Image (tube, rainbow, N blue to C red; front, side, top):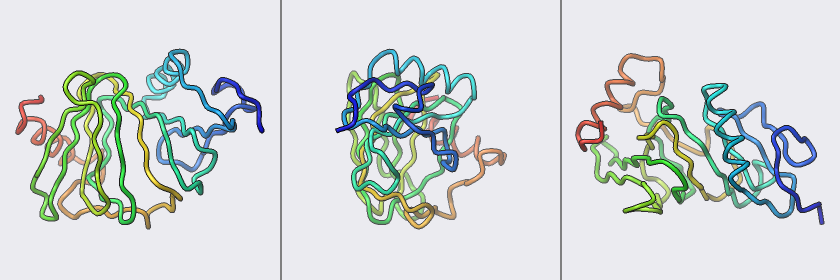
Length: 185
């Protein structure tokens, strides 16, 4: 059994960074992974310093069969609507608040849920369901669980009705329209 120790992003004996990941992603090298306030502070510092989302994966590799991650997303981040072809996901809010939007195949919102740790704590999205998350606070930290392995673009499908490029002018309009339609802006 590997050492049971805390994860530190500055200690390569406790975790490794996936330089090919879409966001900043670290994978635990420990058989037992503990996530505490100190690690949250490290996550926030990295996210704000680099102005990017950061995740700590409690599993060892993208090829693992169970993916357990703690993710910090900044308010200005954007993940386009997508659906996972063969996997479900669960989201458990830890800090901040995030709006989860569910869409039908035509892009109409069929559910909106705000995970805020007060009124709603956990949200599950079944496979083949279009969804997106939008941070409502300066940052949000949540625990995400899904099945592996991660196989890249073949894992998910992006709809034609959802903007894919966060630098495109229609992204901000899309995001703001979603938030306005549920009085979240």
